[in-house]
Amino acid sequence: MKILISLLLLFPFISLSQITVDKTKYNFGDLYDNAPTYVDFTFTNKGDKAIFLLTIDKPQEVYYLYSKKIIQPDSVMTLRLKINDKKTGRFNYYIEAYFSDSHEPIVLNLTGNVKKRSTNALTDCPDFNKQPPATGSPEFEVTVKVIDSLTREPLKRSKVYFVNNGVLVGEFYTNSNGIVHEKIPLGLYYITAEKKPYNSNFFDGYLNFQNNYVEIELQKTEQKSTPPITENQTVEVKIEKDTIKNTTNEEVEEIIDEPIEVVENPIPPKDTISLKNLPDDSFDKSHFVPNNIVFIVDVSASMNGMGKLDLLKMSMIELTKVLRPEDRVSLIAYSGHVHVLLEDISGMEKDEIIEKIQSLTAKGYTAGGDAIKEGYRLAEKYYMENGNNLIFMVTDGAFNKGDKNYKKIISKNYKKKEIKFSVVGIKTTDFLTTEMKSISHIGGGEYVRIVTINDAKRKLFEEVRRTSFKQQ
Image: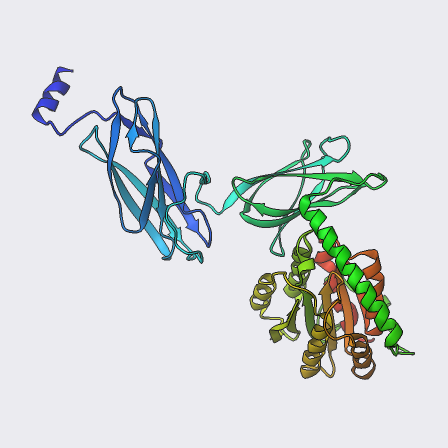
C-alpha cells in the first residue's frame, strides 16, 4: 500500500479507475446488405462517487450514442457504436472513452469485414429502443411452435418450411415439445407447418431478433369448427370475395356473348407411359426438346398475403434451377399495367432470371387479358419450330380488367401454332379452379394448382417435362 501511495504522489496522472466495461473488443464478422452494424458496451461505476463521461475519441467511420453522461455509484451507462458500412473491405477501429476518474482512456476495438455495401441510406446510430443482436451476423435465432388448435398440445414431428422471398431457406421437424429452433437471416417469411391428419397452416410476416417467436395452430381434417384467423387473413378473404364477384359477372357475360371455338380434335398428349419410365429428375436433350417458356405473372393486390407471392416466386425459382442452356425464358408481370421484365433469356442465366423473379411486388388491379396478348406476342416472336412453346399464366385467378377476348386468342394460337397455354393457380378457390381448368383445356395445356411447398417444388417442372417430352 505504501508503495502504491508513493507512486500516486510521484505520478499524479495515475489513478485507480472506478469504471469497468463488459468487453473491450467486438468482431462483427462478415457484413452483408442490411446486416446489424452496431454494438453496445456497458460501463459500470464500481466506486462511491459519480463519474462523468468526458469525451469519445473515434475514427470518422464510427458513430456513437450514449445513454447518459453521469454515472452514479452502482449504476451503468450504455455506449452504442456503429460503423460505416458504405465501404467494402476489412476494418480495425480503436475508440477511446475518457472518464473523469482517470487520465487514461478505456480503449475499445471494433473489427470486421464489409463484404457488401448497404443499400440503405446512412443514418445516425440507432436509438436505444432497438436492441442489437448478440453477434454481428445477419442471422438470428427464431422459435416456431406447432400446436393442436383445440387441445393446445404441442405437435411433435411436424414438418416446418421457411421461405424467404421465394427461396426455401430450410425445412425442419419439430421436437417433442412441438418446437423448431433455428438460426435464419432476418426478413419477410412465409412459414408453413404440416402434419397428418391435420390441415396445414402458415405464418406470413417479418421476423428479426426482437420479433422471433411464431406459433402455428393446426386443425384436424375432420374438425368442423372454423380455425381462428388473423386480421391480415380476414382482409385477404374480403379481397378474394370481391375479386370472385367481379370475375363471376364478367366471365358469365363472356360465355354468353362471345362463344369460344374449342378445338374438336386436340393434339394427343405425349406418350406418358414412356415419360413415366424415366427418372423424375430426367431432363436431357435426348428425351426433351428445347423450351420457349413465357411466364405471365399476376402481381395484382390480390396476390398480397397468405404466402401467395412467396409460393409464386418459389415455383418459378425451382423451375429456373433445372432449366438448360437451350431453354429460353421470357417474363411478363401484370397488375394495372403490363410490363415485360425479361425477353428470351437463356436458361443458363439463372441468376438474372431469379433476380427478376425476386423483385416482383404485388399491387393494383388485374389486367390479365392484356397480359395474355403480350405473352402471345413474345411466344410468337421467339417461336421454336422443333421445340416446346409454352405459356404459363401464374395467378390466383382474377381476370377482371383488360382485353376480354383472351379465350379466342388462346384457342386460335393453340389450334394454328400449337402454342400451349397452362394456368398455374396459386391458392385458388374452387370456383376459380373450375374456370382456369377450362381455360387450360382451350389452350392445350394443364391446370397446375399450387397450395403447398411441395407443390411449389415440383409442379412447374413436371408440366414442362410433360409438354416437352419427345414422341417416341
